[in-house]
Every structure is written in C-alpha cells, then in structure tokens.
Length: 387
Image (cartoon, rainbow, N blue to C red; front, side, top):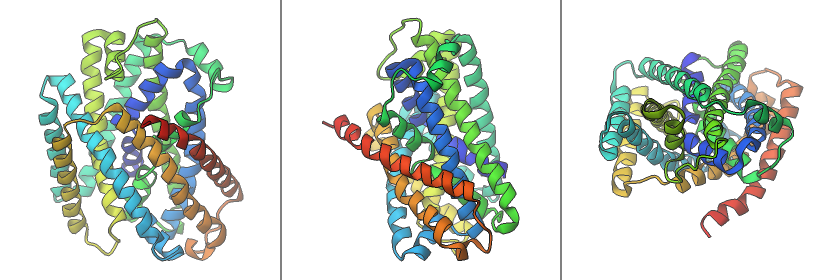
C-alpha cells in the first residue's frame, strides 16, 4: 500500500510540478492559495473514485475502458502514452538539472545517469519491491527539504490563509494546470495500477484502497503547499526571480548556497521518481495483466531508453513545455474520469457487488462537471501559450 501511495504522490511531484507551482506563485502571489485548495479538493474526489472503481473491479483503466466501450481503453492508452512521453522528457531533464545543481554534473549527463538508475530498478529481480522502496525514500527526502526551505523563507502565512477562502484573483488556466499536473494523464492511475499489480484489488480491500488514495493526495498537497510557501516567502520580499529557473532561484534566495544544493536534491528526487512513475504507468496502459511482469519491465526499460534518446536530441525541457503538458493532461482527465464515473453509476456488475457510496458518486460528479468547465476555460489559455 505504501508503495502505491508514494508512487502516486512522487509521480505527481515531478519537475513540471515544481515548475508550475513556482511560476504561478510568482505570477499570482498569495492568491494561488485558493487554486491550490480547490485543486486538492478536486484531486481527492477524483482519486477516491478512480482508485475505488479500478481496484474493486480488478481492471486497469485501459482494460476497464475496453470493457465499457470497445476501443475506448486503447484510445485512452494512446493519450496517456503521449502525455507520458512528454512528461518523461521533462522528468529526465529535471533530474539532470537536479544533479547539476547538487554536484555540478553536466545536466545532459545527469539526465542519462538518472535514466540509468531507473533502468536498473526495472531490471532488478525484485523490481516491484525496489520500486516501492525507492519512491518512498525519495518522497520523504523531498518533503523534509521542502519543509526546511519553507520555514527559512518566512512566508506571509496569514495572507496565504486569507486568500485560501477569499482569493484576490482566480485563474481557471492555473487551476486546470495544477489539477492536470497532480492527477492528470498517467498520474491519476499510477497508484491504482500499482495496487492492482500488487494483488491488492477486489471488494475485500475497499478500506485499504480508500485510505491509500487519500494519503497519496495529502502527501502531494503538503508538498505543493510547502513549495508555494517557500517561493511566496521570497517573492513577498520584492525579489525578482529568474524566469528560466524560478524554483532554483527561490531556493537560493531563501537559504543561500545550501538552498541551491537542497533544490538540486529535490529536483533530482522529483525527476527520478517521476521517471519511474511515468514509465511504469505508461506501459501498464499499453499492456494487459496477461503480460508477464518481467516482459512488462523490459518494455518499461525500452520506454525509458526512448525518452532518454529524445531528451538527448532535444537537449531541453523548457518551462513552457512542462506547463503545457500539465494543462494538456488537465483536459484529457475529463475523458478518463467520465469513463470511471459511468462505471460507478451505470455498471455495478463490474464492481463485483460492491455498492459505490452515494456521497462519493456526488463528489465525483461535481468534480467531473468542474473539470469539464475549467478545462473549456483553460483551452484558450493553452492556445494563447503558443500564439
């Protein structure tokens, strides 16, 4: 359970997560607190429904989609796979930049080293256990370092709390991007697929499924709040942060040279854990449970190698691309989530006799409506990015 929980959380906390939160904090200041709160509430409603439906049915999202409507699962698989590639290039680039900030290693070489570590994990004889343990360790390291920087930056907590319920500004594009970066694309299904592959599925595990899904989102939410406060503390002093590497600059201004090294550790951990999560989940979408774990691991290694080659050719993962990927995933999400909610409402036969709670149905339906609404609103924001 802990492995699935941290896989979901650390998959969400990638370089794109750090980039989006930092850039939007500079852009909106304390007003971002409302967007973060709303995104966490929506995330919980989505994750509870997704994990419960998938894990009780015992089917991955692509398998469930094909059961509901032939071809739907493979359509979702293509979308998630494409999103996974885009994010993984950013994840590899981010981990490389992390090693550069931490040890001074060339960022391209650092990216290749990070990819090699991920490959080693998937090739190990006990890949499942190794995966679960390393994402838990990386998650703990990120939270502790982020907590330290959030404290030393001395953010205006009162102003942030006020904006949580009385925002000075509301930006639908920002909200969609935060949601998309936390539960969009492959991230929504990372933990659920891991639970299913671990054998923790079926009606007898409903309680564990619910607890694990909520804890995963809470860990992600804590990380986002700490990063927001760390950057807000620096911005509130009037410091102008670099547009090219906003988060790193914020850490440096908050805690000096140690802050910069700490950022390197966080970025490396975020990148590596997200490479693992994105690769694992993307491959579970284009395979079925009939595929042997060893074969799936080899395919995952191939995915990592392919993304690494693309990263090496492109030699960059600009902030705009990472923010776009988050927004793109936020628009994909309603499609996948609508399928999950259809099963929850109309296909009790697929839930092995387990009745979906009414309050969860209502929460999921409201989250879906909100997702569709802000997704439409955010579309213009995505178009403007490339105008």
